[in-house]
Image 1: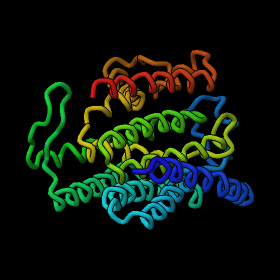
Image 2: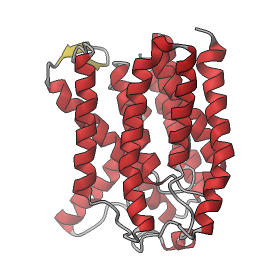
Image 3: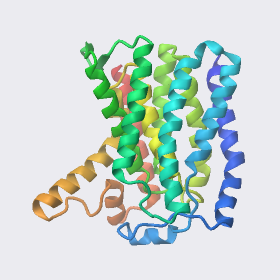
Length: 321
């Protein structure tokens, strides 16, 4: 495949779409005075971010859809994986969109209940798995140094757990300016490389389209953020990563490529478990990026260190393939 067709143009088109559209979204939200309300239990210095426009993830989801449409027009043979990934991306994003919409327009700061979000995530993951089954998916889970192990229909349970788990993990990571945009870009770049080595052109085009959108989004989301991603973006990003790891049959790599997201989730689980058991806290605040904020780290330092860790573990995963 031509490098320009599968990487350069999808990257550039998606990037430009976000850069062009985002200022209109920011102005609209500011004009309507629709901004994020910072939770009281969050870091006190985050209160100054109240009123910042959110739902910016809508724009890079839209850019990915339009970019994939353009790619499909030029090569109809690679549309299946691309559109399956786009479907997951959009539907998980829709959960976040509804959640963000309730928070902003209906003035309910908690949005959808955790049960409602969980059931919707599970339902989409089940549909994703059944689409795979109807397209002769082999239900084999890849393990490092071992190879593929047949799981039969138990793979469906794994797929649901994987997608729901990582969509929530990226959602937890999206807590400070630029953090998920940077770590997400690195993770998607790693899967773009794997897709390239496997000649999985549909997955590659999707991954590159998301990368372009995230790079464009970072311009507006870096500190001080002019707009936040919102659940619409963070839930979609995690589900997209899990779906790519499944389609490429390198599921285990997400534990390394997405290690930052794993650690963010683990910090919350450990904090809740230990507090219920002892009444004490392990971290000053969870997810763990807030702990480092409480330790005096700047947001720029946290983003830089977490991104460096993410890059290192992604390269390790690629080296182990």
